[in-house]
Length: 373
Image (cartoon, rainbow, N blue to C red; front, side, top):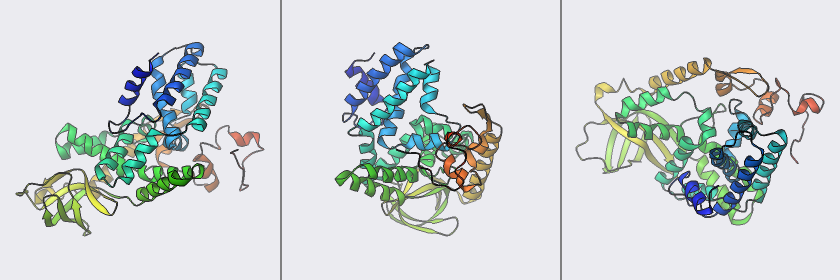
């Protein structure tokens, strides 16, 4: 078992370098100790290395509940708590103790360093801080990574686009951070905003105001996937007016680094993000020759990638905890056509498997049924 200093070092390494964990590291160390003892006593397959990843899930639940959204929305994720307990060979009684421990942690947490870092990143007005925060979730969050599409095709496209592995990875994470949409059409920023609004019901005063302001700024973000642009005007070394391939004009677009005076052409391919009333190049921009423009037609490129991602998902199946075999395409891309079924599916309640309504006399059929306390 780690000492507090060892734990703090390990815990910090699992977070973004710009995030301070000092605010709640003692709280999570205490929780780590309880889990360590419980696993040591109850697990048939003791593995202490599985505790920290589970703590990250608890931290996420305390801070914003982002993992829980995708855990319920996508069946391929499964029940995280149950899967963790099953992987360690824990009994039903021990699993219940874990569930209670997680619930108590969410209730008892007096602050969240992760939430504070997220809020400060959004409210900073600094696009680099915002993009690094969202990209960190896209890159490091294990639950979120499970519901992304097969990334091989995006990786190949960005590698062909940038030509360097590090640069292509940055472009990939920038794309997922701002442009990926879940099965309901929500971006990562949209979902975080929604969860922050939900959290305002449980706080007041300054914290409530900050969460509302953060949600509003996240809602106002607008992103453009990789596509081609023509330079209309250079205003300074980092600010350009660009015309999108479809004719839309973006004034005062801010580049991440100063562009050379002798730019090789008037054409480039880039991702754009509008945040806090300013528009930025997200990731890298690549200057193109005029003859390259048809090759980087964004509509054509993305249509092909999305089609390949969906076809890849059609070839994969998984089995739920209740033994139902499900096609990954159905899980990642479709929503039940029945509005009531879709509503409860987003809460992790599926009518084609045993669920809570089996104990309440059957489907609600339009009745309002409160499942909370």
